[in-house]
Length: 353
Ligand code: MRU
Image 1: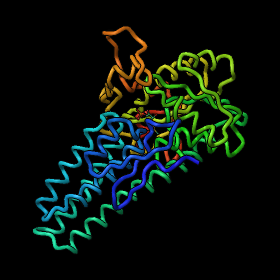
Image 2 (image 1 turned 90 degrees about the vertical axis):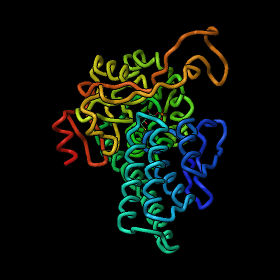
Image 3 (image 1 turned 180 degrees about the vertical axis):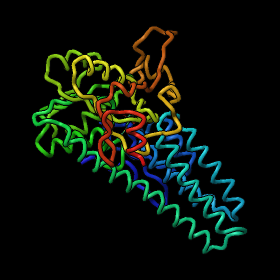
């Protein structure tokens, strides 16, 4: 079992601190939207769907904490709170989806309840936002289960599969996106072996994914990122499945840096490359991958491992946290609604209609 990632209590949002994994299972408490945004920014919680769920809870918690006394005050504080949460990280669209959804609910409430708020109106708002945040989470859990079902069907019996970064339970409130496909296929007895790429520089694969796979009893092995091509060529890998942070309207997909390289290798070896992501990951406002903002993180995460420097002092480095895989390299998108293949602008539009 994977421990709960988020616990929404009256005292605040308890967050499983993923920076301590796999060594320790520890929780930190966020008591405001600012503390929730900080937990997202600092990677205490990460993974696109989980960031979205945390933002929804963070938003609800902030309105409860600030107790806006009128519809005007509510409008101002809710816009400010949504912006604060959305500024935490730029690439995962789930964060924007959840914050905007909570904001829309709140603004509709403000419109329907003009003027000052009685204690009963304030209580109604709290209940409404708590319910909406729990709904965001419930939808994520259901989407994961559905993606697991659809994805597992695509895999052959005796499948040797590879994944990158962490798109398992730790990245969601459910069984995971790509990780959910692997565990669902494992439950059907289809997985011979799963390879987890370590995912430099943040090591989500080494710290999180392989830990999850081991806990779920999936036969699995950890590899460093630069072993991927060799392992695919020599170990009978017959599918790759990854998650996504944002999918453009034409299917170009932003996911953890290194994903694009794996897709190129998959094409060379003629093995399917699958992306599993819930439909809110599809950003129709992004015409193609070129419109997706790629987060640049601190170069310290590249030049140091666990606080120990591994490069010369004063070195210049880069740390794009994501890359964009062109739609043409993706065999299929797996969403909670089913499978999109081939991955084209029109197929995506039809899928969402
Ligand atoms: O920087 P992270 O750890 O938040 O990046 C996570 C990923 O890139 C995942 O693959 C992606 O969010 C899909 S999660 C289901």
